[in-house]
Length: 123
Image (cartoon, rainbow, N blue to C red):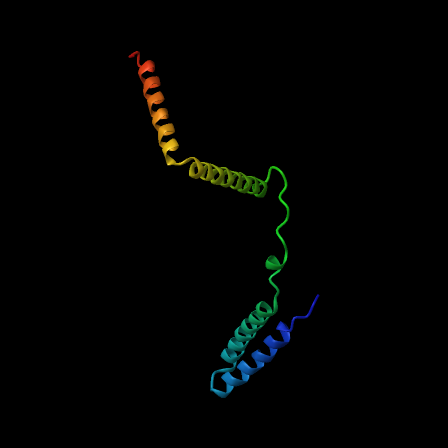
C-alpha cells in the first residue's frame, strides 16, 4: 500500500492538539478525546488533498449494446442526424425562398380539410 503521509500528519497534529488543550487547562480525558478527533480530521483532510481524481483521468468506457450508455450514444447520434437534416432543410428553404414554403403549407392545410370532410361523410 502506498504511503500518502496522512497517518504521520494525523499523529503529528493529534500531538499538537493534545499539548495545546492540556496547556489551555482542559482535563486529560477531554484533551485525549479532542486530540483523537483532531488527528483523524487532519489525517482525512491530508488523504483527500493528496488523492488523485481517478474518474477525471480515465476516459469513459465504450458502451456495450443493450446498456444505458449505448442507448445514450445512439440517441446522441440520432439527434446529430436530426440537426443535420434540419440544417439541410433550412438551407433548402433559404435557397428556394419562403414563398414556396407558405404555398406548401397552405396545400397541406387544404388536403387535411378535404380528408376531414371525407371522413365525416361530407363533401
